[in-house]
Length: 380
Ligand code: FES
Ligand SMILES: [Fe+2]
View 1 (cartoon, rainbow, N blue to C red):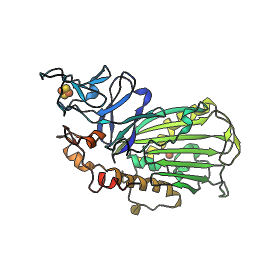
View 2: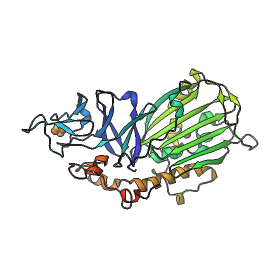
View 3: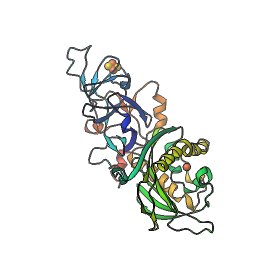
View 4: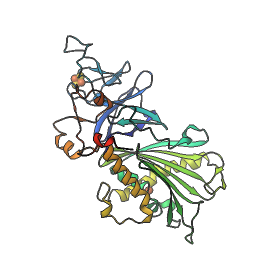
């Protein structure tokens, strides 16, 4: 797991002026909206005596700790210590918790977990421009799976498993041929053309797979002849190394549109879109899970311990770019964190740590040596 990336924290509609606890990268965080509706994300653990702020209340656009009532604003600063000090409105400098940048897009709330400042932070990928148009059926779903996040991301970029695992595709010919379109150090987009019964392939049927390491997002567009395209965009959020929260945005066009091969294809009905959402949520994700929960090792394997073939190229690129970005951005030393978890609090660094490395109560997590800030300067 690595810091300095955007991760989906929750569905935007689920966040109101009641504190919501989420766990990302093994860290407990609290989300809430202030009186203007602006979303905030803080470390969940109060610097006074370690209570969970998520058990507290939102008051006047701030967060009140449940144990002794200390009040924290959206920037993580304590603004009031109601009891136990003679200067309640002048809390000490260290009375603050890490605050993480938040952004909303596609009906989702994203949190930037890391210490990069505004100028350095990568932008959220503009991977779903259809979201702003009324010409698309749209829905958002969320599921938790006890599978490593990178294993999940690889699965969304594995074209050949579709015809073996998923009932809806078992009748189709099994082969695909990958045609690479774009590849950078953070993004891959490849057309996986499906074979017909004779092994021929073209532009009429197949899967367009895209992955962006920023926000760990996969966008799969399924093209079939004479059927509206189906776009499934899946964000994987590492809860910890063994658990992942998946947020999916599922789109189908309402009106006639142009297919990849230039032919015209009709729009989808609301019922067809509803069925796709229900099938993805209730069947497809569980079909993947049956296999993924038994796949070893639990985290992505070394390429030297697997025998990859040509059609695995995209998922191998997903793995490679994720590992390389992690090296630059900072990989968390989870073994060291686990050792002290019962006796110490560790937090993910936030931009405030760069601005002022002192005056914090909780220490930041250790990064694996050779990863993180030093190497980041050389990152493209
Ligand atoms: S533990 Fe939060 S105010 Fe005391
Ligand atoms: Fe699948």
